[in-house]
Image (cartoon, rainbow, N blue to C red; front, side):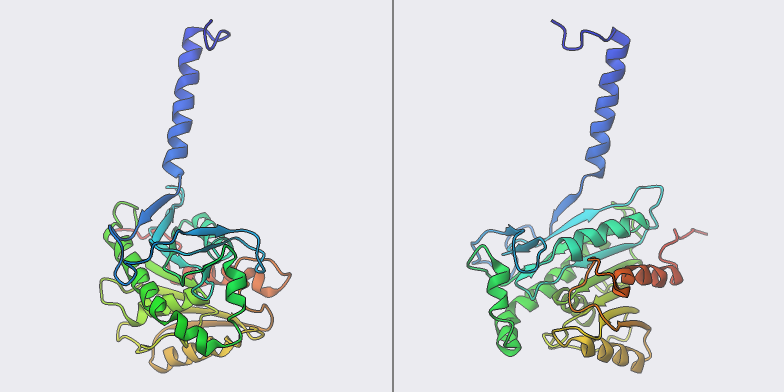
Length: 307
């Protein structure tokens, strides 16, 4: 018996060709996971636990935890839309988890629709000893000083991962059809710490061309020296941030403007901490549209024409 008994030979070849084309199309648009280090990264050589994924937790969102090997997951726009701009995205989670969807994948998909290449960063985290890292974290949230002490060495590693991510994307810009002068870094909460850590600790090779700290936590950063060639910032948070981080954003804005650097601040009346891409029926639901307006104003949503 023939596998395709109802197709003449010509139609069978056409069916096969269409199937192969579809398979290739899916392969081309599949997300690529990039290992940032060829071996175990410095500082965590002895880590022997496994990365985990949790969907049932107090945050009511999917989180990743116990990241040992930092990665970038590439989300690339359709070639017809591509602008040459790229954004590395660092989800938050107090350096214990990563809110991988609301502050990662969902952001990447929105950026792709605007023609922007997106790279979701999984950076190194504090070791969680159970399969409910959120519950572990919540027990520690009452003492920020103690939490900062526990996170200290990991913050340094996470910033190193952020710098490595920028270096990778810039070095491989041609491969991804990206302009190496249009690479941004966006991060949420602890990811905002990583975002600003890359800015404060970067060299010309690893400095983002623009940055977007979203309800960033700044107290974990030892170095907050503004570089002479500091990139423009898009800063966003809510005044009713239940962790008290609103002033972290306003202080950052004031420091940037005081140093005569470019910055835009959006401080919402309500939204709380960690709104990300969640819909709450509040103006914060459209914060990313304001980010799009800002990028458009800077020419980052338009493909650069070569003279």
